[in-house]
Amino acid sequence: MEKNAKPYVIAGPCSVESRQQLREASLQLSAIHGVRMIRAGVWKPRTRPGGFEGLGEPALQWMQEVGRELGVSYCCEVAIPEHVDLCRQYGIATVWIGARTTANPFMVEELCYALGGSGMAVLVKNPVCPDVRLWLGAIERLQQAGIADIMAIHRGFSMYDNQGYRNAPLWEVAMELRRERPDIPILCDPSHIGGRRELVAPLAQTAMLLDYDGLMIESHPHPDDAWTDGQQQLSPDQLASLLAALPSPSGNAAAGNPGLEQLRHQIDSIDHELVRLLGQRMAVSRSMAALKRQFKMSVYQRDRWDDVVSDRLKYAAEAGLDAGFTKELLEKIHAESVRVQMEDRAQEA
Ligand code: PEP
Ligand code: MN
Image 1 (cartoon, rainbow, N blue to C red):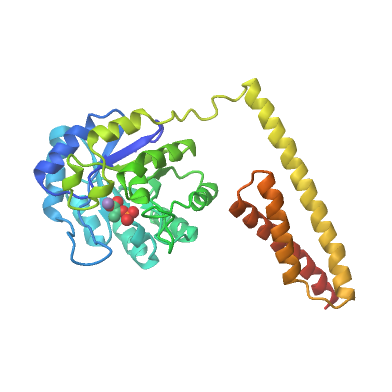
Image 2 (tube, rainbow, N blue to C red):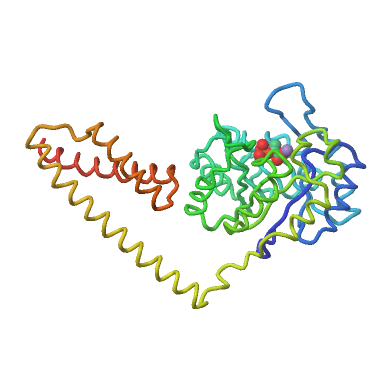
């Protein structure tokens, strides 16, 4: 995969439905500037049984034939070793591991075994649950199996409350993966995050503003007639408009701009001040720990903590800060304060 030109766009139907649908989609999508590869689901194990579950081997044969005819490359999901073997047989050089599979290290291990030595490129979707270690683990297993060409795909997480999306984006979880593995390019799949057509473009925009390397977007020549995920697929025209309207990922192009530099200086000094104040706050916690120890008080005082939170939330509202963010921040600070005070008690023991 040539990963340098951003965004790396993979587009295509959720599922292969017929030779004609595959050809029509491929013809239209490969003509769109920026589309580098066509996705097309061949095996579709649905969350619940009874739906359309993919056409299997005949779809792969069409992909091989149409790919040769039009000069396009395809990728599809693999979930069991037999899928990998069939992809190899039909010349599919890029596959992805789906969200349900990434969540299962047994299956990832089986796939690694089948993929080892194949030279295939592998895209790793995040696991359905927001556990970044499973995502990292799948990437590590693939690397241990000798797979060199790997990218991650952020497709959102299945939560009790998906925040109005099909899968909650939880951008911070993907951010953690990026911090741990800056060497692994990451694509966003706004189709499976959004679940609805109108959410796809804003999510793709967010991903570009967060400096993602690319996008995987579901697109079908006739989305309303799609056999799977019709409500989230874009027509090729809609995809072309989405891509044309994306903010250009120009990296740090404004570096050196005097306005930006000045604002960055402000951020630097505010952060320095924040860190200095946090240090002071923890020093006060230590002094408090000694007093609490002297008076045989417990470290955690629930009523006091409730008062602190409601007081700070009032200040936060005046400062225009988001209440959820403020609460989370306070909880982090409080947890550290409790840890510091416990250290004091441990010394006493
Ligand atoms: C898909 O891309 O069609 C798909 C099933 O994805 P996921 O594994 O993200 O649910
Ligand atoms: Mn789909």
